[in-house]
Length: 260
Image (cartoon, rainbow, N blue to C red; front, side):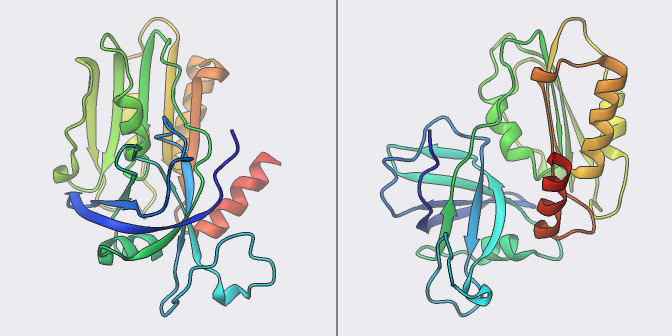
């Protein structure tokens, strides 16, 4: 299925889920062609620059760079077709980037561009057991996976958060052991997430693994999974959502280089 054309949406409402996670609900335009069951898929937010009365949508053609919106990548938390609402969860960090700054100040009626979504990023739900690992940037997509796990699912979820108060009440099956790891300084390289993953006992059978977050941590976890456990290629999703010291634009350039 082709991606829907970019569109302009507006804020319906917003609220804080935890001290460092804010949910903004978008709607306002006909979403009848928006794909269902795409929670966890990435999309592009087209954030207006200060003073912009109009949000330019791609393709930009001859539109000058300074008239184009700021583009940031997020993952779809929820789509309610009946209500025509899209929920986006923003990690709130200091200092604010363009997206978190917009989310903090978002008020009903505020407009923003939306391009996507792409393909959903779900684990293989037929696996023998499951391993999820990620920081707060990955938590919306991990949450979408957790909500779809079979009731008998077993395994681990290793989730890095900024503060103990950032734990979310998610519908984990009883067989999923949840480890909340606090890292108050995610902009400083650390092994918090990596060490927590390595500490989990390895279960028998073929696991489905879903890992995302800061690129350095994701690479280290992926290396461990490949070298120590030879996880099946089709059952391993590992994606760097951001990288310490890089803007999103530079990070996306580096990711494209790795794939080429």
